[in-house]
Amino acid sequence: MENLQKLNLLECDTNTVYELEVTPEIYARATMDMVFATNLLKRSVHEVNIEKKREETREKHHQEKIAAMNRLTDVVAQLVKQTQKED
Image (cartoon, rainbow, N blue to C red; front, side, top):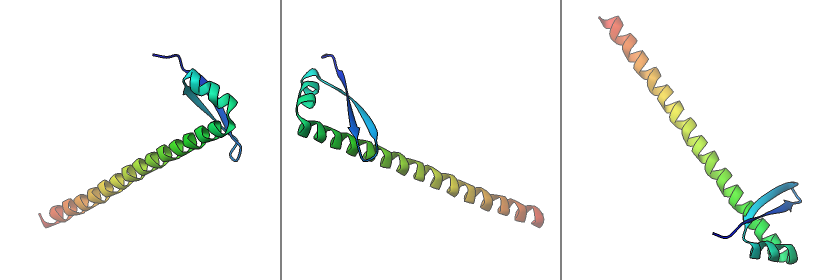
């Protein structure tokens, strides 16, 4: 496997540094070709945003499951109380 090099790209709007591990060929091209480096940065930002959205979706679904279980627990508790009163 080829040795990867770390390439740091700064996204100026958010002042965020993206650290990429790239092949020596990509590293050399990115340091010489600003358009290529900009495209790498855009792709990195896009991939990070996609992953953040996935994580937010997973968290939202997790919270929805917890809320549903809590509602179910409340219903079961009410049924148990009703049953105990009837006995």
